[in-house]
Length: 111
Image 1 (cartoon, one colour):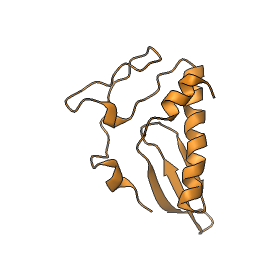
Image 2: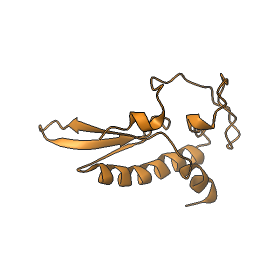
Image 3: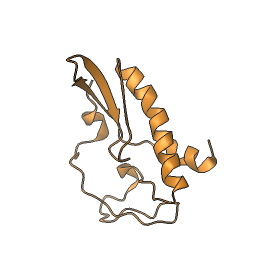
Image 4: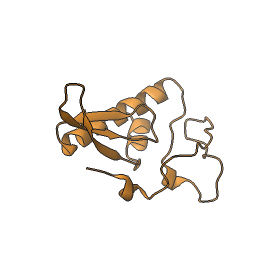
């Protein structure tokens, strides 16, 4: 993993784990980073879903960097009164999108 992918992968993105019903009627855990669009995984246990999410996060970030796209930064890194997202180290500018999640991250994790 190159240094830029490692840098972004080490940031603490909001993580949500939900118990979902499969199309076959079973259950699985779905883990996601809502701040990284498309970054999600699933597993039979929360631990499995979170472990797979680490790999998914690295792949999403690597894809964004390889295609010269901005990498979103976690909300906690934004100033409280900011209406804009900071310039990401890729050199691109990203605007802030209001999130439906207004509670602190610890309150959003469900198992």
